[in-house]
Amino acid sequence: MEQVSEGVDALLFRHVVGHLASGVTVLTTAHGHQRFGMTASSVTSLSVNPPTMLACVNNAVPTAAAVARAGKYVVNVLGEDQGRLAHQFAMPDDDKFRDVRVHTGKLGLPVLSDALAHLECEVTEQVDGGTHSVFIGRVRSAVAGQGQPLTYFRGDFGRFEFARDDRVYKKARHQVLSRVYLANEVILLEDLAGELGVDQSSAFYALTRLAADGLVSRDPDRGYVVAQFDVATSDATFDARLAIELGVIELSVGQASPAELAELRARFERMAVLLVGDRFVDFDDYLDANYAFHEWLVGLAHNPLLTATFGGLSIKSVMTRSFGSTPMTSQKFIDVQRELTEAFERADRRAARESARAYCTLAKQRVREILAHTGGRL
Ligand SMILES: Cc1cc2nc3c(=O)[nH]c(=O)nc-3n(C[C@H](O)[C@H](O)[C@H](O)COP(=O)(O)O)c2cc1C
Image (cartoon, rainbow, N blue to C red; front, side, top):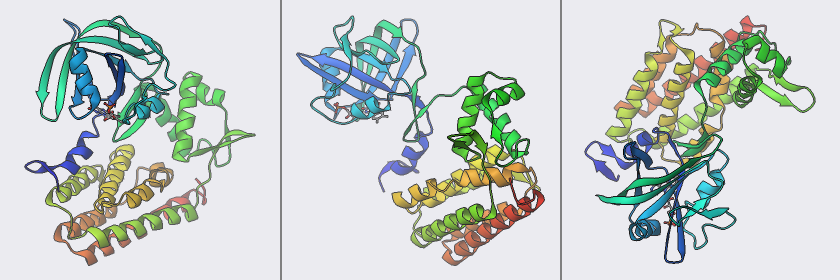
């Protein structure tokens, strides 16, 4: 395995550093009559006085040499709907600017007209960063428009959201989970906004996230309707996860590196502190930590198809709709996941299989208990 430094291999480094969310920019420049542009997320402000940016560019890409020769570059900050541009400028191509609206900026460089913001910079220093050059640039012109930025997190593009909207979503989710709204009931945007005391845009945001969670569905005639949840959905989801994990156990027990096992253990410990004495300390945090643990476990097989299938299971939605409806749970969930972690550490495939099966059975039983309390519906 490619080693970045002692104890940190390339796979682990990529995974961990992917958690550092960033904005997405396109760096543009020109040399002679040729225009250059590349997607770059390793771009940040360095100081306010003087206004200075820095950009880290791989020496292997043509844009690096072009910025060095031109001695200037533009940071075009992309807006949330410009994922397509980010892809276009991330691929080597002779005509990167195809179908892109461009004007000439104050430094005579191409500026992407529809970007969210532009910073035109003159290179004051080029620092050697091994495979990359760090271009430090004095900002000569800075212009921002209206809108939200495109973001980059764990290898994927996304949208920025305000913490306030997140709070509204959590309240709305609580309403659905605590059955203020019943299965099949229509939730009107104006009613939800009124009940939560928020504006309609925050309520709409909450509804779209509830739809992504599978808690509500969008009916073309009736609008947002509270989705029904039953034992069959839960069983199918947990059985599918078990099938994937049994496959992963076959492929990876005894093969995982010490760094991978250490990360599995670290994720287990982060999850274990969030379920104490048959209660969730914080269900949302537990859900994230539980997902992160199983995601890493599945990743140990180094099989992108297994990882993608796991990602498509809606595990979080099923757990939210069942376990998320009550703070009460069982310490056994932690015990059996500890056994699973230890089985990987001991390279004991049989014990790992047994723990994975026991965990699946526990989950399915717990959903049945919860549904029994709610008359079979959530
Ligand atoms: C989201 C994202 C961020 C990127 N960030 C950088 C970066 O900061 N520095 C870099 O050298 N390459 C980065 N790349 C890769 C370049 O965009 C890619 O190598 C591009 O083809 C370079 O353009 P060129 O070949 O026309 O010079 C990024 C790619 C993506 C998709």
